[in-house]
Length: 463
Image (tube, rainbow, N blue to C red):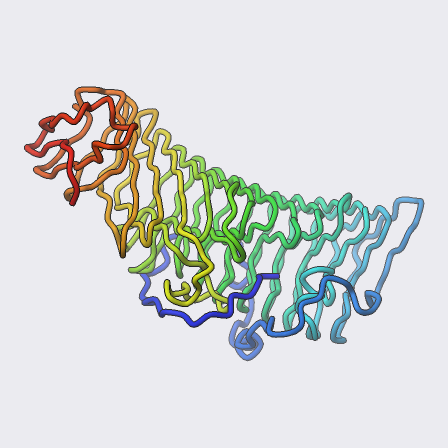
């Protein structure tokens, strides 16, 4: 359930570069996407009364309930065609599924119940159940989640899954209420809007995925949606009209050895849909993140306090912006950012980015009193500058002695620290760094002006 943001919005340009990555095993390659065009055009409707309880009992075509013995089934097909009906419901028991197929048609009449309880899912696992899935083919239409886990103690281990969905809010692996899903060799495609491949939901879901391919086509359909914890390794993902990662609030995402491409808003979008909170953490290791839109930063933050680590990671952008921090959040439509004037209850973003053994090119852009702290460590290099997008903003840049910075324009910093006190690791290209001499972080400079390699200088002042 993506919490509503019912505010007027300012449009973003949607121009994008062509897809840069290759997907092998993408389910959309073998399906007739034109047949599902009308289904995928249906918008997710969260403009309804919020519910945090199930109005009626879960209904399913096939159920396994409360058995004290382990159940194993193989070579079965589970189907459902009615609205608000699961194809297979597993409740308070242990089940192994091998070489099974699930086909689900039928709409959800209440997306909050679908989000919070898995109503209308293809496979819905509940109440401390343990399910092991070895090879499964899941096809859903009309907006049905593929594999859903609900409740603390519920665990799904799934390997070799082929997942295809059309219609809105039809996530691939989907965990809520502290449920856990661990997936290996998952191939997922969703064509509808707000259909992330690997998603957690309120209050938290725990999703781990490896050796997988994911492709989403709809607006608001990320590869990952973090409400809880996302852990991913060796994932190739393309979100045509969404960021690779949405994160709402105090969540955690750890992504390694992956290649991920985003087509709208930003490479990742980290925000709080309510009041500002701290504790959002994202770590990329040995990963390439591509943001194709010409207005898209690689990393976007709004109304959040976040810590980001980039280790041996590449950020590629058409916009030339690595990080953007703002007084903003995403809207209910998930295709725009809220304008500064639309919601006075928001707060400026505060972002700390630690770069480890990475070579990055692009700028840091902050708006409306937001803060970006940028730390280069362990032989990292950065080519770029800082820029205030609107109003005032604050930047802190730190370099260890093994790292370097090449300026592309004059820059103004609240804080500047460098383990190389001669600042020989900064190449100015004729540009200058202006630092705030009243900040205690700059006491080591003692108000001095230092000549930089390339003709510029490090000096007290402002832009």
